[in-house]
Each structure stands twice: as structure tokens, then as C-alpha cells.
Amino acid sequence: QTTREKPSALLGFQAVPPSQEDGVTVAEGYSASVLLPWGQPLSSDGPDWAKDASNTAEEAAQQVGSHHDGMHFFPLGKGKGKDASRHGLLVLNHEYVDQTLLNTDGDEEITQEKVDKALASHGVTIIEVRLTDGEWRTVDSEHNRKVTATTPVEVSGPVPADHPALQADDPQVRGTINNCSHGVTPWNTYLACEENFNSYFGTADGSWEPTPEQNRYGINAEGFGYRWHEADPRFDVARNPKELNRFGWVVEIDPFDTDHTPVKRTALGRVKHEGAIITESRARVVVYTGDDQDGDYIYKFVGSQPWKSVRAKGESPLDDGTLYVARFDDDGSGEWLPLAFGEGPLTSDNGWEDQADVLLRTREAADAVGATPMDRPEWIAVQPGTQDVFCSLTNGEAGEGDANPRNPNSYGHIIKWHEENGHNTATTFTWDIFVLAGDPAYDDAVDLDEDSIFGSPDGLWFDPDGRLWIQTDVSNSVQNDPDAGYDNIGNNQMLAADPDTGEIRRFLTGPKGAEITGVVTTPDQRTMFVNVQHPGEETATIGEPTPEDPRAVSNWPDHDPDGRPRSATIVIRKDDGGVIGT
Ligand code: FEO
Ligand code: CA
Ligand code: CA
Ligand code: CA
Image (cartoon, rainbow, N blue to C red; front, side):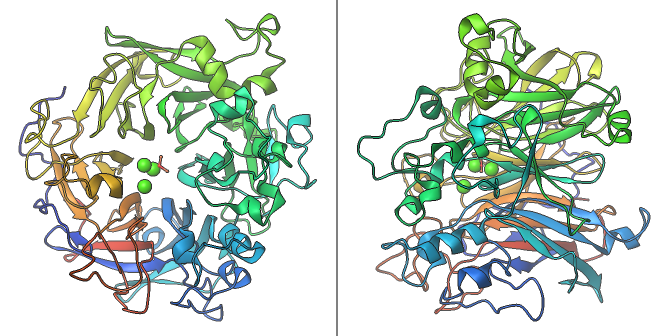
């Protein structure tokens, strides 16, 4: 474990204390304001947000989606100077919906209109933003659009749209769903990742049973309780099972091209992709992804050819390469195991048909080659300079070996690895634990203090100076459990770490019940965008908490007694106009 020396030259702000308030607190000398709440129209003549949730599905399709997550800022201004940092496209994921908040009458009865509204509230928002007179505002623009769970999409790579496994009821493959984290390609496109796609499928057919493959992806008759199958046969897993195979992929979106059709890149594998973080090594693209399930794996894709020469031929560098899965050995070394048809156990003798079969059943292929089960792999970030790779393991109990040293691991940890010779294309690496999260009051293995205690790390991002931003996603059930050991940690938060000294300092705390996820700065690092997801999760009721109901009720950000909590993108600026984090 890294020795935590103080003070770090990278971290120039005073830590904020843990909070249980229903608001956002940032370090002294910084200000945060709300830019893009759920339901805000994409253009000034679009449908206004209805605080009683009476907006229709058609209206929701013209508004910012729900449950904001991964996000990137694409400059529109020219050059790397001031202009590039004052004008751009914000592209953000909308991971899921809370149907009790989405509909005026909640979710007791599921109708096609409610399913359609939910589908329109998922996906990705692309919206133009500009800094004028010291304030960020949205701009009416032809760029402003949404990719939702019904948008037509293309499918490329070894599992194309005409593959037999993808022949569902609708001849057109549509939509992306449960977009958690993301990636940005060197050619300036956005990758939205499909995480818990299984949660939307179900059936009332009592005779239906999942296949072993469906079982491995967590498909069951109830899903996560959305019950869309009651109104929409698209999501009935007994009637339309091949619809499932259209999800679990990474989706490429060109935010600059308003006519661009999103493309599912199947060579990157089919798992519950948390994110798809890209770096370049030896002219190839390398894409890291965590499969966020307790006991699942960390993957990387390495392009087969230099990406610029592939692009010059009019092809995608994400369509041809090798997908690997990680094995972490207890001696601190590790190996990337190829998931290639015909290699190792992935042969026809063992029932594998071809590379498309390996990708459609990525999890089973990774089981077969002996990958290391991890404590829920979430975001991954590559350190500028060293090219070392950091991954959040949010919590869990199914991880194995010294790479998952606590069992159960209710606080999570961040693991770090160094690829051989610093080449991200390498097939071997060495690893160590960057930090064990938690509270030393309950676990004396934890080397953190009041300025840095946190749990359940999720979002990770390196800014250009090399600060590692850490965002947390402690579930509400844990926060509300007095015996969970989270009582000193407070609401979800964002911290910054110096990756070299190991020092960690809390920068921001979020509203009640909210997760903090998604972070990016403008190129000049003088504006930071952060997403606040699901304020009031689970315990949300309409209105303010009362003495009779003091649960983690949130009414952020509007605090309108007739309103409801809303996920939102916030903008953080330093009051003296300086670089965020200094
Ligand atoms: Fe969507 Fe794994 O967090
Ligand atoms: Ca996440
Ligand atoms: Ca999470
Ligand atoms: Ca969450």
C-alpha cells in the first residue's frame, strides 16, 4: 500500500467535512451551481419540466434524461486556449429511472406510455453549453439531441446486426440502456456503456426458465422490478429472448455529427460494462472495462493495428483486436488472458462455435480461461505519464485472492497495476492496492483520517495535472443501516488523490441519498462538471422530511415542497478563477 505523505503539492484545497445535509458542499473558495437537472428542455422552446411528473413520453424525449452518470466535455471553441474552455458539447449518460418519481401516479400500474417515458429518459444527452459573463448556460443548437433506448443503432464487429442471435421481434436494433460510465476515443467520439441491461427484462410466463447463459448474465423473471414486460412485449424474455443479446455492449456516438447513427462495438465484449476507458499504446487503442458484478472481471481490448491506419482505411479501430481478461496472482504479478476462439479452452471441442459465440458469452469465456473474480469492478483510469491503471472495486464478497484482501469487503478498495514496460498493450503486469477504503474506527487496516474517510469508490478520473478524482456510491440501504460502519462517512462524496504520495482529501459532499458520479473539466481545468445521481434514492417521497419520517429524504436541488428530487449536472468554479483542485 502507498504511504500517505502530507502535504501533497497537487492538492491545494482544504478538506470539507463529511455531511448529512441535503445539499452540495464544495471546498472553501469554490462554488457549485446546478446546470442540467433531469427534465430541463433541450431547447428554449421545448416542453417545460412539470414538477408533478406529468410530462408525457413525447415531452420527456425532448428533455434532459434521468439519473445522470458518465460524462465528457467536447470543446467546440478552437485551439487549446480560452475558447476551447468556454464553449462545447456536454455529453452525459442517463443510467436508469426511478418509476415512483418518473410518473405522477408512480409505478403500481405499468402502461405502454410509462414504458415509453422510461425509454425516453434513458440513454445519452448531447447538449451545447457556453460560458458567458461568468456563467455556464445551455445554448439552442442543432447539436442538442438524445440517444435513447429506442433510437435506431448499428451493430459492428464479430457480432453484426444480422447475426442469428440478434434476430428479435423488431427487425431494427434499437437503443442503448443502463449507460453507466463512458469512454472517449482518440478520434473524439463518445462511448456509452451498457451495464445492468438484465434489469429491464422479465416475464409473467410461469413456465419460462433462464438458459445457463441467461443465468450467467442475471436474467430472471422479475428483473429489477421495472415490470416493463407487463405492457411492452419487447421486454418479455419468454416471448422475445433475442432482444437481450442486443444489450451488454459498448456504443460509439459521434456528438459532432447530428446525423450519426450510434454503433454497438461487439469486439469489446458483452458484459455489464461499467465504462470503456481508452488509452494509446504503441499506436494501438487499448480499452479497459470493468464488469460490475460481485465476483466478475476486469477486461481490456487491444486493437490489432495502429488506430490511425485503420481509420485511414475507413474502418473502426474498435472492430478488430484481441479481448483479454485479467488474472491477478498473489505474488503481485498478473496476466491478461486472451478470449480468442480456438485458443486455450475456447475451442469447438468445448462447445464454442466461433468468435461471435465467445463475445456473446464473454462472461462464460472468461470463466473458462481462469480470470480472477473481483469485488465489483467499477471505473478505471489511466495515470498520465506513468500509464499506470487504477480501478475501483466498490464492495463485495465474491472477489478472490490478495487482490481482494477483505472478505466481506463492505468499503471497497482501489487497485493499481503497472503494465510490463509501461506498455498498455502488454500481456503481463504487476499490481498493488492503492487504498483500502473505510473508516479506521471500524477497521484498523484503513489508513485514512477525518479528511479522507470514504467508502464504496466508483467514479475515477485523472485530470490533466494527474490528480485522481474519486467518487463514491454508497447505497442508501447501507447508509441507513446503523450497523454498517458508514455512520462517520456521511453522504456520498468526491475526493482528490495524489497518486504518487497517496494523500487523499475530500473535495465535495452530495445531497441525501445521492451518488456522485461523472466528472470532467474544461481543457483549462477552470470549470469542472460533476453529476449528482438519484438524490433521495429508495427512500424518496415527495416533499420535505418530517419528524415522523426523518429518513434520507431528499428534495434536491429545487427544495420545492410540491416538487421531487432530480439528478443534475453541477458546475464547479474556483472563486478566484483558478485551476480546480489547486
Ligand atoms: Fe452503474 Fe456500476 O455503477
Ligand atoms: Ca458506477
Ligand atoms: Ca456503483
Ligand atoms: Ca448507485
